[in-house]
Length: 79
Image 1 (tube, rainbow, N blue to C red):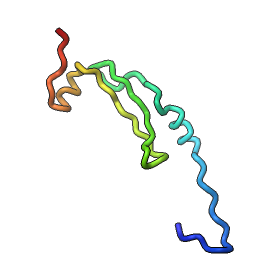
Image 2 (image 1 turned 30 degrees about the vertical axis):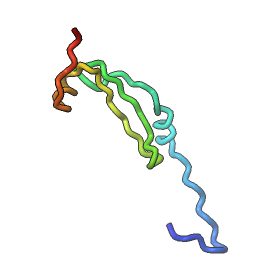
Image 3 (image 1 turned 180 degrees about the vertical axis):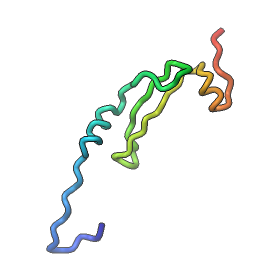
């Protein structure tokens, strides 16, 4: 991208692709699954600093043994 030069037409802004539109529709939605050891949910979000970059995060339950091993903490055991 160069600097704007007088007399030269500007490029039109890039419109969101169909894939971006589909991903943007999933932002905030909860998708069940994502872990074989607990009832995890997945949530889509769009990166604030980089529009068009989407992140799918897996949110585990407190007592998930896989997540406890991964994060090196003891699993929550209800009393």
